[in-house]
Amino acid sequence: MPKRSAFFEKLRESAASVLPVVLIVAVLCLLWVPMQTDLMLAFLIGTVFLIAGMGLFTLGSEISMTQIGSHIGSHMTKTKKPGLILSVSFLLGVSITVAEPDLQVLAHNVPAIDSVVLILVVSVGVGLFLMLSMARILYAIPLKWLLLGFYGVVFLLALLGDRNYLAVAFDSGGVTTGPMTVPFIMALGVGVASIRSDARAQEDSFGLVGLCSIGPIFAVLILSFLYRAATGDNGTASAVSYADTVALGHGYLSESLKSLKEVGVALLPIVVFFLIFQLVSLRLERVPFLRIVIGLLMTAAGLMLFLSGVNVGFSSLGYMLGRRLAEPAFRCLLIPLSMLLGWFIIRAEPAVHVLNKQVEELSAGVISAKAMGLSLSIAVSSAMGLSLIRALTGLSILWIIAPGYLLSLALSFFVPNTFTAIAFDSGGVASGPLTAAFMLPFVSGAVGALGGNIMTDAFGMVALVAMMPLITVQTMGLLSVLSSNRNMSNLLSPSYGDAEIIELWEV
Image: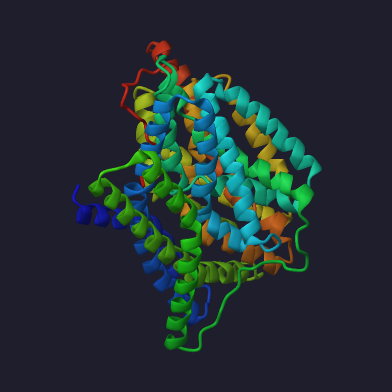
């Protein structure tokens, strides 16, 4: 596909993700819920920034990050040195997660933990579990036992640690499986899996993302024993008023320059790592090298536009809309509106359509893509509704997360292994950029207006959205086992070609 048509295709996908939410919010604010004119204008300008930023970012990431992961993964496998593979995987996991846009948005919305501390801790968690994931592939360790063991430790830490960190920890696991991290990890895992020659090697390359998402939860819960959260600040999200259009323009310009600096710092580790690797051993030809450099520049530009649109337009309006809907006159709209937004956010996510088609193929047509899409929409819509119920009641997230994960882990013993791996990978598909960019400030605003605790009552929404596919996909897998008259041995041990990869994410 030519570069121009590829870029317009990414813009189309970004617009399909963003515009349904924008339309719902615009109709609501123009007809029922009064909102400041400058905030609405900032939101509409932010829509343009988000669409352009997500389009540039995803195309740039595809050209650069996926290629870097593929080149490094295949090059490492040639050495066949497990120590080198594991150590490089750790460094890559840390480097790539620092630049994850969803993590950047989450870190800037957490009021009680310094954003740099949170980003670094989460990145180290991903690095450690990416290293563990590579060891699992190299030594053919069953995924379900690792999931069972580590989630057992996670819930033990959750019971003993600071409750203010609990929801943020689970949210961190959801946001790290984003458009920057996922394609890179998947490409790296497939390269490492090529070391093994047995029939299950490609199957074991699934589950990487699901296992890596435990790392941030684990790391933030450990942080709760070592780092005291700040007190007295109940939220960083707020609405900034603009006196006129010039003030609004200057606001976007100032935020763009600030975001550009942050993006440069975030991308620096992976750029340095790639350049060193290129000089020492990779030695790509001029054309593929320049292609990756151009991709990195596009990634940086897209990330800058995305963060600027979020920080100036989307977060402010989302926060104020949540506060306004928490007023007695509009409170009855809180839960239905959040569920409606959740329904359209997941329906418009391009990667979800890829997931649905893959499950249809994997189940030999027993589960249709339409049925899978409907079940995911119901799941994410329910997750949004549960988040607002928590905001209204102060219900601890453990009462929802613990039964949900216990059910997910129990299902893993009754469904084909590939369904379990895809289910735990697919949590990142559901918790897309709009969940952190708009819905999290929306819930924070509602909690703030109701006098609740932002750390315990607002955060946890991303975690609920990421948890639902674990149940949904495995339930679909169980239905395929019960309903299909085909030979189940083909389902339990699917056959893939040497170069065939099932991709759940499009970037």
